[in-house]
Image (tube, rainbow, N blue to C red; front, side, top):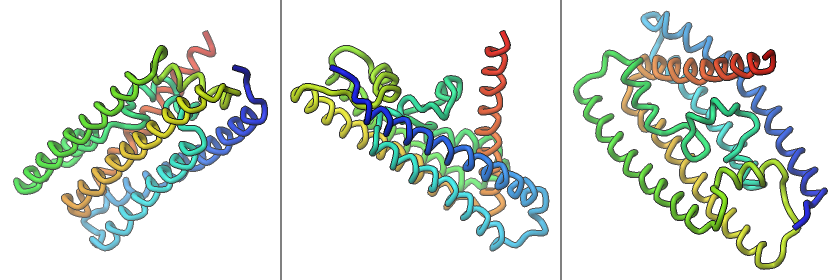
Length: 238
């Protein structure tokens, strides 16, 4: 096998393009967090319709990320499993190329203290459903891993994601194509579970509670990133 220079160039271009998008996306997330904090501090003076509109914009912000992520996954799904736009520390929180869907329930528990009994029951039921779906996807990931002789999915991802396409024999191309298709489907289903879980949580909570929820989510994500960046800076200085 030898590396395909043109594919390597395309791979680098797509990574750079997504990294540019992601940096701008994080800036917009900081701005949305400011709006969420302001709305949370002044929720008694805010109309529910205004809070709903803010939550709608937050959901659209995350949806944009998943749409762009889907595009790069179709180009090279291995990049999604070894994303250069996330630090190794951030990736320790990942489950199938993204945050675990059940993280939403932990965030609700810690940030929303005025849940009704009915809301708790609905969230508990949704949590059980989500864990069942997670297990099915974990089983599918295990099946895919078993079909790969040799390196783990993550090792393959780091190799293929970094180096892009390779010139392969016909048999290797068939195996690689099948693996890519399986991983693309797995990531798409995992992202669908993430987005649908969040949407269902939003349906259960009222507007002020949703503001608390998304404020906590954004703070957690940005805090993890800052911790990661701080750790990387210390490594560079040592």
